Image (cartoon, rainbow, N blue to C red):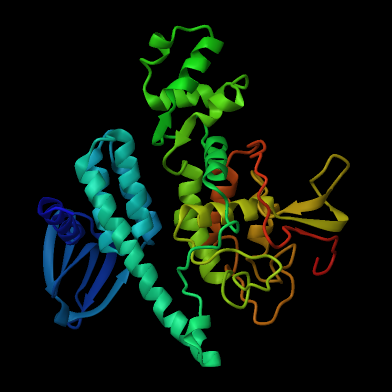
Length: 404
């Protein structure tokens, strides 16, 4: 790496701190004297800066009795993103730097990728992307070291401990082609643009199929070419494979940023769905595309057969199969049902020792985010992925009526 590039990366890392001044978080500050300040709070060194209707008040940390933030990071990130103009590259990069200052590197990556969709040649975005990737690797390594030490101490051998961020074994995750299959299908025609690359041979073949001169079709930008090829039911398999989607479609970006972290922190632990002996196993941590898309594919493929029919489902009064992700019908999705306490859920989580529900009710903030993702973000009828990969553990449970 040359000196100029190092300086640029160092400068971008430094601007992550500056971004915290540009993006505050809504909160309430109460001082030891009893004064209360409610507004946008920025933490800067030894001071807190509270902005109330444009008026900035600086409060030394030593004077602060309590500081309570009133909104979640995801809510604040979504709000700030929604306020940006569709072509605001700088705004998205500033948003990414703010996310970095909050140690939310996945959200930072999403904001950078959104900026690159608008301006694929943005050097600032590329440099910042390098910084984010570096920070994510450092975090993964820092999480791995304590876990490796603990697991190694159990049998006196550190060599047997698998690092938390170890790459999944070859064949245990989806391939690059499988990931592309999911991205092509899950990118909805009404979704915002994603970063794409359309192979010229596929574009020529498609133009010929629709009886249009290639020179005319080539005047369309890559995103529009991709939309036309993927939305046309007559497109050939080769034409579709010629569309390479370089970033997550919105539904998968939401899964990566909001859904998966909740599941992995609560479900994919060493004693539950992260265990090698679990009948239903997720990959944790999921810091790579192949791990994230494999987890999504496993969840999307999971079904449970019942001995009885479920009201309001099926063509003769009820369904006999429940899906982990029942698109457009989150109330019957096992992903929601299994996350609720037994006394609330219609379909209980299989009984295991020390199981703790993720949500107390469907009104919880994280539960609403999950149901919104299932009902509104995902395609209702995505079609088949045509993926041959199968997990090492089954994703269909046998007929069972226990707990209902």
